[in-house]
Length: 467
Image (cartoon, rainbow, N blue to C red; front, side, top):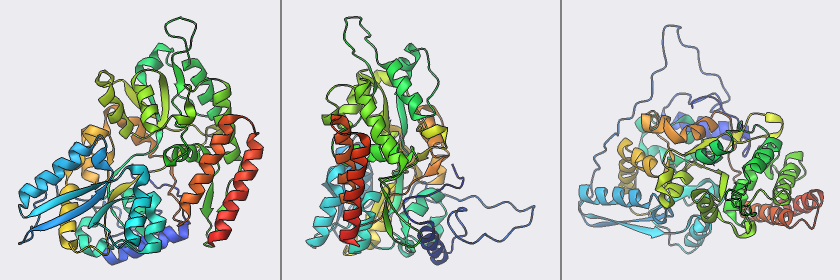
């Protein structure tokens, strides 16, 4: 999992500059080949690089001497892993009896907008869960505290380089990575076997062909009751995120920052067109369950759980949600890397999330104690056990619980290219263009070419209006 990965969402120059500066400040050596524009000095042949050490397996926090409330904005408390987040808070409060951890529960899809509103209103919590989709706004509004000097240089080497790199912008660490959810294709192993164990599709044409093979009338009553693809078709960030993954793995992109620091539309790339065509064809070929325009992430997960669908574009965390609905599927779920155009190397997003410390917060030292407590190996593995999200810290990643079993296909997805989400403050407007585009593709009233041109015009206007 430690190999060099390509990044497309932000310019390589900006990424290299930011990470190199961060490493210089923290005193950490080169993290990976993509982390710096300069090659590290050669070491003697007999010398092996020192492995990063996790020194906080079971962290004992330094507690405040007076009653303190720690306010944390989080969507996790509302999800399957909410029990783990609550357990961490409870254990922290036992270790520090004068601390009260207060969660501000915000649904995932609402988090960026809610944080923006809280920042404008001067009501930011001490800490908040940071998604990369909030990076642009966080940079623009300067709401986060740089964590490198707060965490200390001895703590930096414990992170997976990929997680660490994505958390650093302009030499500052925006959030402390906790877990990641690389996107791949989740599938039902039992239903796959019932279809004769077809080869994993390498291209989108093969994917559609396999989806057809998996779309069957299982009870022979003349009606299709099992579909190949549980597509998330709702017009929101959840649906758009999956559409973007298809676009990227078709060789396109919606927009990006060039090396010259300018934003450009990618809607006229062939990959964007191919993704629209795939969505339209999936509906025409009948490989997605009815009601796809209102099928959100919870509904698609339920379709996998109850056997109405076999495949889903998602991350390993969905296995926890699916097994909660159907515990009998333990051991019957797995994943494989995303198909691409012409079988090229797949691209994934890390789905990196973690806790950020608000610049306006009053309890920053306590926030750091909580972060180190939360990121101890014990709790990383507890989170992984329930939701299958991949830990950010190297020691936890190497545990057999993580490296084996149903999540292996998602671990393999990390060996391809990595797309880091663009950091533009207007990213939300681009998201809207995308989901309007695939929603029109579903309807079939316009050709993919027509939809593509309209999306390109909209994205160019968004860029021009915000330049």
